[in-house]
Length: 205
Image (cartoon, rainbow, N blue to C red; front, top):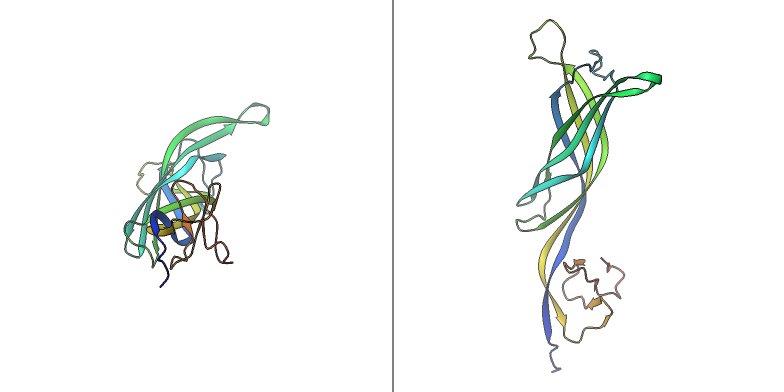
C-alpha cells in the first residue's frame, strides 16, 4: 500500500447557487403642494425628480428553501416649478426612505448560508391618485413611488476543504486537487483559489 498523503483543512465559502431575482421598493406619500396630477391616467403633470441616494441596503432572513428580504433605499424627491429664462426652479425637496421587500423560493438554501446581493435599478415609476381620505372641497393627491431592482444573489456555504501539505502554488494562487469538492470556492482572505485547474469546468474567483 502506498503512503497516505497528509492533508490539512481550510475553511472556505463554497458557492452553492447564483441567480437573478426581482425586488420592488414601494412608498405612498401625500403629494407636495403644487403637484398636479392627471386624474384620468395618474400621470404627474408637475416636474418631479426622484434621486436615489446610494445603494439599497438589504437585510436577508433565511428559512429552509426560502429567502425573505427586507431592504431600504434612501431617496430624495425634488419638485420643480417654472422660473426665469424658461428654466425650472426648485420648489421643494423631501427626503424619503423607500421600503423594499422580496420573497424567493431557493431549493438549496439553508439557515447559516451566506448571502451576497448586488442590485441594479430597472425602473422608477411615479404616479398620482386622489387622496381617498381627504374630505375637503379641493382635490388632494397621493404619490405612488415604485422602484424595481434586478438583483444578483450569490449563495455560499462554509465548507472544510482538504489540502495536501505538498500543494503546488505560484505567488498568491493556490491549487487544490478536486476531491469530491466540485464547487467553486471563495476564500474570505481574498487568496485566489483554483479547484482542479486542469479541469475545463474549474473556475477562478
